Amino acid sequence: MSTPVRHYVGGGFDACGDPFPLVDPACGRTVAEVPAASATLVDRAVNAAREALRGPWGAWSPADRSRVLHLVADGIERRFEEFVAAECADTGKPRELAATVDVPRAIANFRAYADLLAGRGEHSWHTGTPDGRGALNYTVRKPLGVVAVISPWNLPLLLLTWKVAPALATGNTVVAKPSELTPSTACLLAEVTAEAGLPDGVFNLVHGEGANAAGQWLTEHPGVDAIAFTGESGTGTSIMRAAADRLAPVSFELGGKNAGLVFADADLDEAVAGTVRSAFTHSGQVCLCTERLYVERPVFDEFAARLAAETRKLDGYGPMISAAHRDKVLGYLTRAAVDGEVLAGGGVPRFGDDRDQGFFVEPTVLAGLSEDHPVVREEIFGPVVHLAPFDTEEEALALANAGPYGLAATVWTRDLARAHRVAPALEVGIAWVNTWNLRDLRTPFGGVKASGIGREGGDHSLDFFSEPMNVCVKL
Ligand code: NAD
Ligand code: 6OD
Image (cartoon, rainbow, N blue to C red):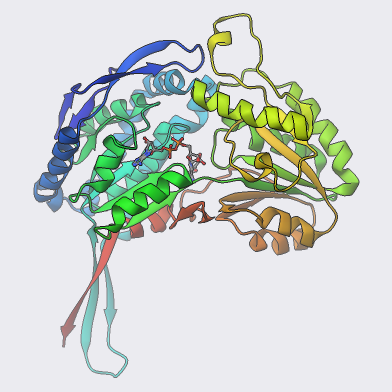
């Protein structure tokens, strides 16, 4: 590992706290120790962040902040390989994924918000009043204050920076708590923020678990003004309770059970290749991954056979994040094998090397389960997709829109009118047509129903992390 796991509070690194093991999911070995922050350390971090709001940072102009965000991006770029190595070590993901998605997106997150901020400024003007009396109104955008950023283990750096960059862009200070399973790239990020010249206390980092630990202490802390969280929907509920007492605003990106729709007129080559990506990228451990695929009946058998064949060819994939998560995914597969049909995968691969002690699960295609089966209803967050046929567009929409989640969906069709009819009728935050996970960072990102609260991305993030205030001057 490239850097020891340490807290970063008020500009100083610190490894205090009871250590817990950091396990390499690709081989099951403990590779390092992570210090668990005490409640006192969390308190220190929040106080350092509060203090920094009153320091020079509070007087930095948007242009100054934009410049420092670019310097952070430069710093990640300079240490690109260290970031890639740390992300792969913590998650077990293939190098190619970290080097083409996670780390480039972290850089892009800082650059995108630096550029947006520079273009947008912090004042807007409105003159005149409806009744014709003279007044000059202007709106000032102010930071919320101390923001807690709590992130999960699947895309650790990408998802942390997705919130940290706009929070800093808008002048807040941050206390971040990455997942206890993947703390390393956050430590590198702390080093880079210091190298970039971010004043002490503007970015703080504490490690530890969530419930009854650093995560909970942070969200319950009266000095935290807002909470930006990505993770499970159930955790969102707990955090919302913690925030409710002091009415702290929350932005939540939560779980999903994403559906895909393949119409008979789709380009099946594209739909099969696209579904392999959408179901099995990072072994299904991306919140946007397709776990339910509905295929129009005339092409169902052909599609299922081709998807299963392509799935069997997959190799070089990464493990589940932990033994516990592997066991959870395998539990679903055991039930699916009894109640339905396994078209590809379904078990644990054997490699004949170290990886046999890791937490791998085969990419798996299932069919034949009822819509109320737990495999079809619950988020699995593993390399598992279930196929079912449909007969009409209305039925396809009803199937896709069922269930408690509403994060993302894919539609595969060559019929333009159908695409524009079906995509907006999906109850999700983002629908892709003939593609998956094609991202423009200026667009709204988030979920409906149990998949989230609020939207991030572009101006949506800058709006969440700042508060507009109106000043009215009578002329
Ligand atoms: P998780 O909710 O278990 O943990 C996420 C973070 O919250 C971790 O840092 C954890 O320590 C912390 N945490 C846990 N309990 C807490 C509590 N009571 N108070 C405060 N903090 C607490 O999620 P995970 O297992 O790390 O991530 C997988 C989940 O995240 C899946 O459900 C996935 O769909 C979701 N996810 C959603 C998105 C999105 O954009 N919608 C993106 C990535 C992951
Ligand atoms: O692309 C993004 O901005 C984003 N937040 C992706 C989330 C992926 C979930 O695992």
